[in-house]
Image (cartoon, rainbow, N blue to C red; front, side):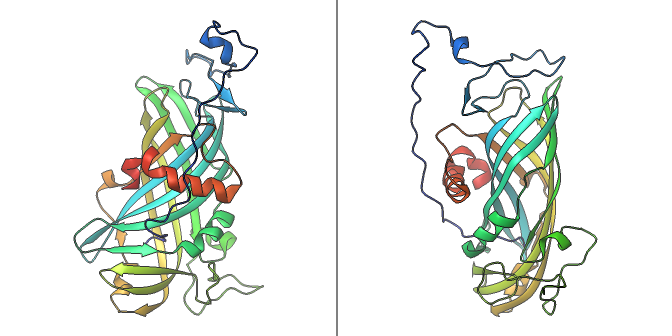
Length: 307
């Protein structure tokens, strides 16, 4: 079962506010007077100007995705005939040169699991969020965004995310995830107590089909690619992904072991990632504050992915 975080727990909402026009721009100045120029990829015929605030574009020009983005990953798993929606919240700052796209700052802001069938489970583990924020950093993730006949072809390279185990060692997909007897030491990799509760890996609280706690470590990968409309400030890409979750122990009904064994649903249309461009007043502050705002804004800015 995918690693997950508390259903229904969000940070405080951001305050929204309109920006005042610069004092040195005359009231009758054309809109272009407020729009610093941005580089244009050769042959794209893009309008090379877009509003900029604090160094970040406030709108998408052509296929240039430079800027600040809220990202919500939506994946569905199946176990014991029950379907569950897994969400992960991310914050990306991106830069682009030509068609080459780079995540210059990528934060994991947590996850949750919500039952979407009549008999299913909800999963809760907010205590592991700080460790995910610290360790599951997507800074440096590469991608491309280029003009095509039907819009922008956008793709992001495969990324491996580890929770509850020695990060550098288990990001290598050829390594086997640790068993309950393989606790990490100063000299050997293994599971690690990421939420500092004295249990192996990280603890998730399960309610619904079965009730109790399970202790997990996990390795998930994803890669995203698709075509989106030119100039999009909100867009969705198909999500190709998979996960290995090791059950390190449990407390409660033996049905919890089946919850931990849930697998990727075969319907590819259920797996996608939504990007929503952030305004200058949204998701500001230190990393923890930024992530709290991302979780709060996700149901409004990316409603389909958040369900």
